[in-house]
Image 1 (cartoon, rainbow, N blue to C red):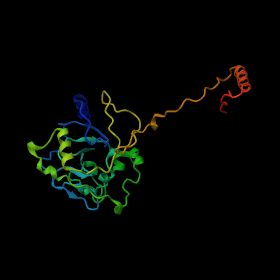
Image 2: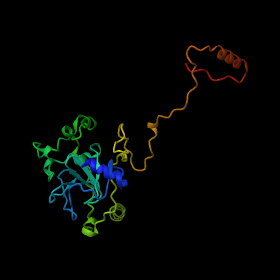
Image 3: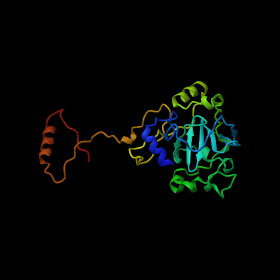
Image 4: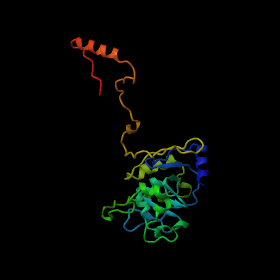
Amino acid sequence: MRKFCLGLCLALGAAMPAFAQLSILFNTPGVSIGINVPVYPTLVRVPGYPVYYAPSLRANLFFYDGLYWVLQGDNWYASSWYDGPWGLVQPDAVPLFILRVPVRYYRVPPPYFRGWRSDAPPRWNEHWGPSWERDHRDWNRWDRRAAPPPAPLPTYQRAYSGNRYPRAEEQQRELREQHYRYQQREAGPRPSPPRPGGAMPPGPRPEPQMRGQPPNDRAQGRREPGPPQAAPGRDNRGGDRERRDNRDRPGDRGPDRER
């Protein structure tokens, strides 16, 4: 499924998602992820969490921080509208409050959930391995008293179903800007477009940038060129004679060599 979607994305040249502050790998309108939400779903608050879930759906659909989140198989997807189009979200970019939701609120738990406590979150550290766990230490430890309030539900989307549902990304964005003023609380790196052939660029993930923050040039490693250094083993007597001549000229003394 992942290889198919990625190949189709490259073929169609899909545009960046509107919520580009997330680490969305791609967003291809028309690609099905195996769920269908024909009307605006009933969303219920997960007790003690700033997250909603859809108890009446046969899907692991949640709402958090102004976006819908779906776990389908081993992949997380996100969308600003209840029936997509969906964008694939890398494990490192899934919000921790989504990952902390207890197992019992997953309406269609995947097979690897079997045997896990229903009142505890899925064991993502076991499932995604030591590399993910190393980057997300204490991911399930948090002060419940300091939990943020849930984002307001986008109830304006109730008026859009069937033939009225906006499939074009531009139309979705315009309607959202008109009816939903919530500003997302979490921000992350911009997506890295796939390379030709489907290979992702190597190296660490870029540092998160908040809205309005200028690009960070520290990674460029730019340095001012230093003074030229003498090659080892060369005769520097000519340079010593020149420095003595410079000292004999008042007001024309050159800079000392760094030791």
